[in-house]
Image 1: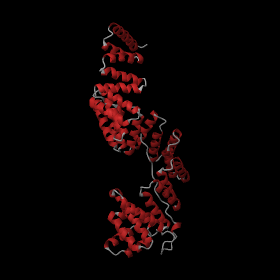
Image 2 (image 1 turned 180 degrees about the vertical axis):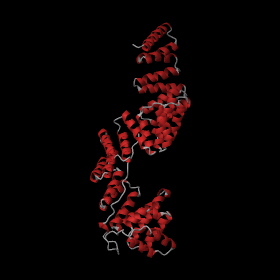
Image 3 (image 1 turned 180 degrees about the horizontal axis):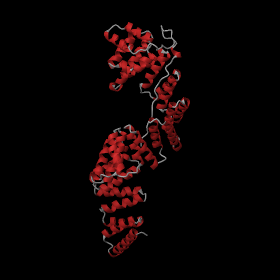
Image 4 (image 1 turned 45 degrees about the horizontal axis):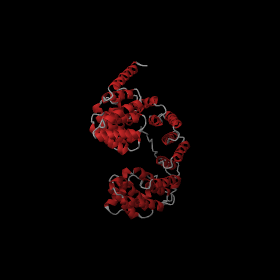
Length: 484
């Protein structure tokens, strides 16, 4: 028995004697109950607190401590009843509101927990625990800005509070305000924090700031503290990969999968790494595996489509984007990609169907500003398809619409123009141009057309075999980093 425990036993013995000699002294009963609570003698504590309440029905302290005893013993119903009795006597009893908030969380009533914790903060503005709890609850209810205010209040009351430093740093990390996040995260680090989440977020911030060495050091420290964390392993692999160490990245992602085999992000990243190393079949297998794990995983569809284009399989790419169109019915991306690919395949009528439907979708958009950036590319593609179908005047008019949506439309779409528009088509556009705007649009596009670009098979007036010389270049979506 330690000295403190022995001293507590002596205090209890003395108080028991006082209660025996002064049974109507409720103050002594309350002190004895608190001593029993410290000794974890819950039944004895409940007995003494009940005696106090029987004699002093408006004793807030007795009801509050009785609630704590019941909560510690797992009896949430009686605990809630005791705290509610306390606040019915004094609606501004902050500690009772605070614990009611905790009980509401355990019962899954988050909105109720928010209301009780807000009352706790209002009643006791200096309660650090209440501010911290309210911050957590605001995050849970999608109110990050208000959460930040609460955690800042915690720091005003307790400048070295590690929880608040961690949470504010994580909040700014999520908001991608990495410099501000580092202010709080490095402060927590200097105070000696060994929280693995802290070092994970430090790694993300350093990575975003292009300080690869510090990012690796922070993430490796996070793994020392929590070796089996698949999210940290995935992120560390991404840092290794972007730093050029693909072998180490692959090893790290494989370890992440050994920890959590159903995690899709490391599988996706392994596909990228294999593809980057020239192991294209292995890369494709990884992305196919992503879709087995999650049939709606958009990044895998995109990369499989891009890989198909790079391999000259436009039909395969079209099939991937058709699948994506079903997954992303409200997005303009699949229709734009399908219009582009069908055009390059020589299926001009089909391409026009996709893009004309896309034009209607843009015209119906409730927020025109949200689709403004896409308008120029869509109009350029539509005009190009119309030209290929022999609708020269309408085609050049669409190019003008593209130019009006973005005066720099040609440069912004230079990759498409140089890859897909063949010289004869550009000449046809110039011949069809009548107005100054039409001549300007045709001239801007024509200046970026490459002489070696061939038309798809069957394109009128070309006699080329473009289907045998399909584009083999492309861009894969890089990493999708996890956060913690």
